[in-house]
Length: 124
Image 1 (tube, one colour):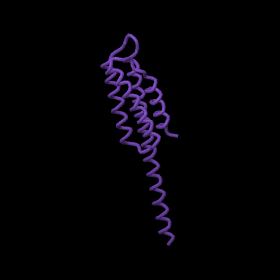
Image 2 (cartoon, helix red, strand yellow; image 1 turned 45 degrees about the vertical axis):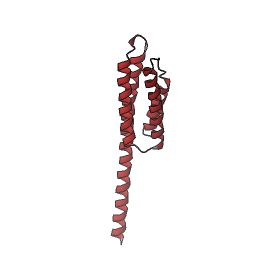
Image 3 (cartoon, one colour; image 1 turned 120 degrees about the vertical axis):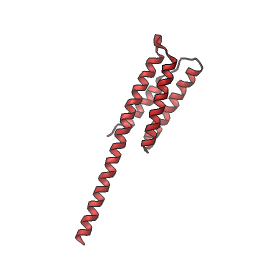
């Protein structure tokens, strides 16, 4: 009987550890991808700023952000991360709409949403 209890306890401990590692792996993946999103946001800011205005480069940066958001979406199931991804997608869509209509985009919502994504993806 004692052997069965020890085996059950060891199995439960191993499962908990495996799940814990999985959660850490997801958090690190999210954090790494959020970092890449942040770099893409910087590229976007540079592409639409002042004399360096480059709509093609801005669209490329927006596409990279979208691709990275898809990766985060596929690898996390956290509701806070989902909301941050949704907010950043909305902000990216707003910039894309501005560019398509020839207007200067407001990048502040993109920066704020990217900051929030970084915050929720940072392992505690």
